[in-house]
Length: 203
Image (cartoon, rainbow, N blue to C red; front, top):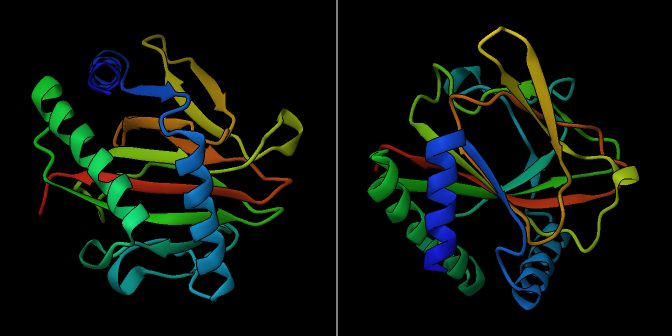
């Protein structure tokens, strides 16, 4: 695990992002997916909103996913294991990349069939404290035809832009600098499940 975290921190330092397959084992992935399904069946998910404070509102033309925020003070045993892994990642990123990370906030994210999230940055004027974005996919299986790719945009020094599409394969972890990489979730043809969160420079 230590070697893997070192690899993640090196890639963040050099390239601002990294994609890691099999970050968690299959038993843990299936357990997290079952917990998510149980919570969904209990009606605990809500339509995701955009904006902060008084400006917060549901805008389905921008994003149409559903979320359930995790409460750090009342994590389930499975969520606590995930939180511990993120804490270890935070410590390595601080040690290697000097990011000053202090806390984590995260939620389960569900994209029903046909849903999407238009191009955006995770750090902006209303949420300046998000430094590193962390996404862990929980899906059972995924193919190109299922859609729902994470599309990241990269600008070259020449001003030209390239895109990289990442399939939401179960157990795959994506980590990137929140301020630097615009991204979107392409329309999905299959229910898409993840745990998504942000390492922040505030407590």
